[in-house]
Image (cartoon, rainbow, N blue to C red; front, side, top):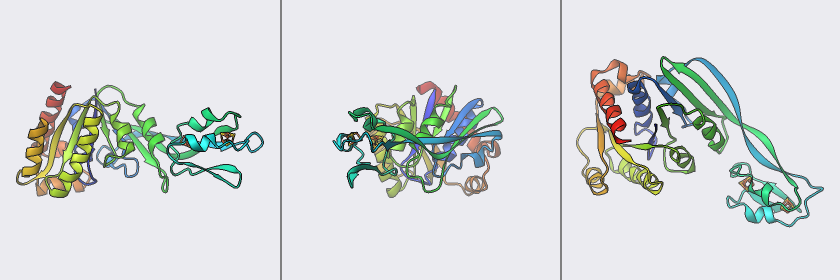
Length: 274
Ligand code: SF4
Ligand code: SF4
């Protein structure tokens, strides 16, 4: 079972939910796909780690074979290629390493070259396998790293997605059996929550909601969940003690009775929902 934890914006509590759900699952795999800011390992500090360099594949052009037909440029839907000074030029920041330009080139003038984009770290925290994608500073796309991390899924797997609803999030959700949408009960949080819900709905994924930092129910969010038939799986209270423990890098599942009850019940519910 693969469970993706999503949130519309950073700071909503996605990682809090993901790491504590992994702890509630007991024997599980936790994959941190928030590769620009992977902080799950602060809560699940892995032991006996190994690191593997992950590369993206960028097109390289053979000037001797290239006839200047520009079919590669026309093909690239990401607009990562331009024909400049009588040769194709790639913009690595927007290239998605799809390999399509090499396939369409009638002259066989395009090959692929490796470019390191980050590191995949694997380790264990007790019974939890901890997989972390760490993007090199300045790299624009973490997709190859996210794919490499997702290939490590094994048994019950909790995927800590990047925040928002960009294509990196879609990559994480594509293969998930269930999505947990972590919502902050504020106007801003609700606005972003609707975007991730739209993404999960687009991919026809079953999903439920965890409301974090709740003082009072936020009426628009409650109404939206009712209208969409979205189950509210858990409500994490706006609690100073919990916040202080999380800020100190503690796994609240292990340090708070309230948190233990919330995440144990959440895990039981998801097991029934999938
Ligand atoms: S590999 Fe794909 S995304 Fe990258 S330049 Fe070629 S066609 Fe465009
Ligand atoms: S498709 Fe091949 S031959 Fe045509 S411009 Fe691109 S690299 Fe050159």
